[in-house]
Image 1 (cartoon, rainbow, N blue to C red):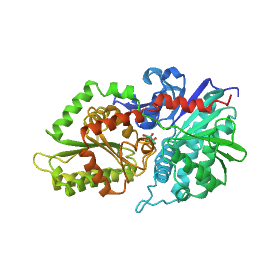
Image 2: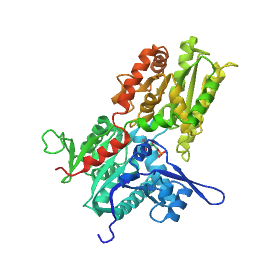
Image 3: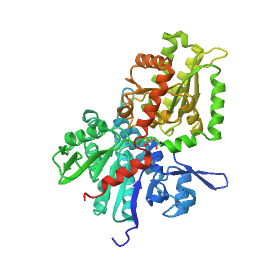
Image 4: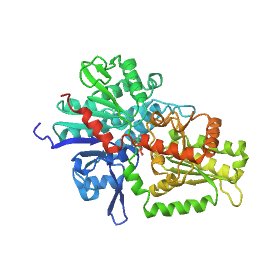
Length: 490
Ligand code: F6P
């Protein structure tokens, strides 16, 4: 281990804390990376001394990674130590767009339904090879950077093979894996080619501890290990040590943990009261018009988020309850995501079309029923959180869904939450949210009506309780919980 690195704590994820854009003169500008995982992990802060290993996601990132050498300039990363891997574009496209986002994402979110059906053919085999190469690149970098006995926290479905690959290279390390998505139940998971299904599970089982956002996803993973690998499952009750369930496979034990990532109240409340958010609130109020109620939603435009059924539910509300016409506006902030994939581009186009159809069918000269914004704008998201009367969070399946947790924290006057029972957040929030079956458009429309007519005092009281539940495990504590759970038993 002569060339072993010096980091005691390492984090690995596809998306890193910064993303670069290039100007025409070739200069590069760093900005904060997007998404729930980055929000959670960013709370680590540079003082924790962790090294964050991530992938270069585009040409500007690649250029920054090349110019930087192994580590990015700390001035550009807010002091965080970051190693950005320069993965060849073809490998990255197949590993990220192909296996991660078109196969594993679809399996775990149960998104394969006609006409989107899985086809595991020669393209899949090429993409799988790229996914392996991509995972090897991470394992090599982590093996090189980690100090003796260091803790490595590997994040998400992009890097499912890393724990086992890293263990082969560095058996001295303590390795954790955290899944930010749901996990598919065995009958659905078995849709994957047999060798792939087994390789993914074996990869994650290379960790000392595999953790999930809810018990439901942890149980699904455990069930897949038993079903696909024939692994032994122990419930933890008879064990000395952590008492956590564990999986025994080929002589090794992997503990199974749960940490429900919560919202970062301090950050959100401070950020939500800056001038740019107040400006966006004024703009939105102007668009909504006087004395109207608002139903807000904020998502990446992603098939699992179920935006189209949400729009259909709004249409049904206006149809079944004409008294709401002219009196309510649906603010839908649907930011582009994974636009390199045709299925996402098509979905984005459908969202825009359905919103236009509702406006054409119901709108009047003074009232636009759906206000759709597609430009990613965090200040506008916070503005919507603050002013919304109702928040609609209706994913068909979601690891957690931080929007459901952020709205109650930021809301000015209380916001009723209509929440899919299939979001991980429902495990913690269902007591005070109006829970729905995300496929049931009629039920969703009824829940929207109930939310709009909820007495203000009830709405405010529920919002306060939701905010408490939503912040039970803020990001910094969530990260520390993962790290502490990896420490060897005393
Ligand atoms: O849900 C998993 C996840 O990694 C989130 O943490 C994150 O918000 C989202 O997927 C981002 O996806 P992508 O990096 O493909 O934009």
